[in-house]
Image (cartoon, rainbow, N blue to C red; front, side, top):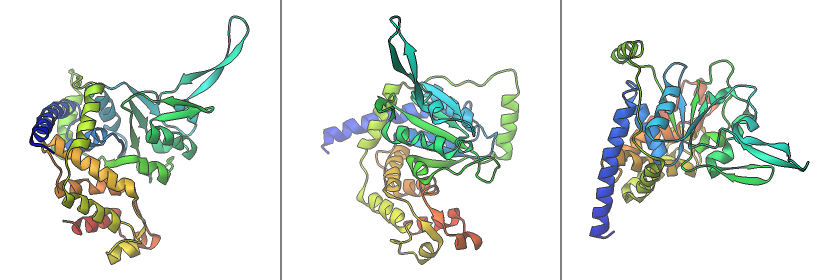
Amino acid sequence: MTQTASAALEKKALAASDKLNKVKANIQTVILGQDNVVDLSLAAILSGGHALLVGVPGLAKTLLVETLGTVLGLDDNRVQFTPDLMPSDIIGSEVLEEGAKGKRSFRFINGPVFCQLLMADEINRASPRTQSALLQAMQERAVTVAGQHYDLPKPFHVLATQNPIEQEGTYPLPEAQLDRFLLQIDVDFPDLETEKQILVATTGAKELKATKVLTPKALIDMQKLVRELPIGEGVVDAILKLVRNARPDQTSIDAIKNQVAWGPGPRAGQALMLTSRARALMDGRLAPSIDDVLALAGPVLQHRMALTFAARADGVTLENTISRLKDSIA
């Protein structure tokens, strides 16, 4: 990269970082005490991907997605997933119409997936068949109905919320669909001071509201900028080592061989490459570091690997396993 090109990239990155700080500040006027969740959600969108928000009901997951749509200036739709939801309720369907002269023809009616930000609320409450209806949309940004191809608007992102699988009335997401989510973001209970702040702020006469900061075009430009940021060979090697060590047939860590049933595919490495750049951009840095990889290892890996039955019986958790993997590159 020439000195002129480097200077131009630095100027664009600093301008984008300033704008992203305004985005985060605006979101945080509504979403209180979930800074890490906000950062990860923005990193997923800046990387051009989708995110899965996991937590018990009442932790403002739905509100977060609505607020992101407002602040980022995206056309958003919401689908409440239920056991009786059908694929056509998401994608759309063809209807038979009769013209003035009696001629009949089919017309496609767009489903709620035709938007820029789709909130799939409580996605694991729908049947696997309906969950799978999102697969093509998430991967190809398009859907096919009756042999006809329909492109989705740009940008297109799915932010899904999910209740923990231990709760009644839920279905585990198919592994193929889980892999389409760039990040799994765990939403935890707020600490004492934050919960007190939430109680006061949300029960008063004044309603908390977010305002638009970005446009879809500005967001697409930032997504392109993320891919332009340089990434050092040492960081690339760390990502490769982390991902390959998470696979039981490729790892050099004995405990992983014995405890992991299946590990992450190449999409995990791609997710780490993109989200590390996005995290660096949000921090006003021109290139990601290994610290970015370590910070994102959990959200990238936890839904892309599974422990053996014996490991779970012995009390081993994915959190402990990922911590061991992080130690291997720290």
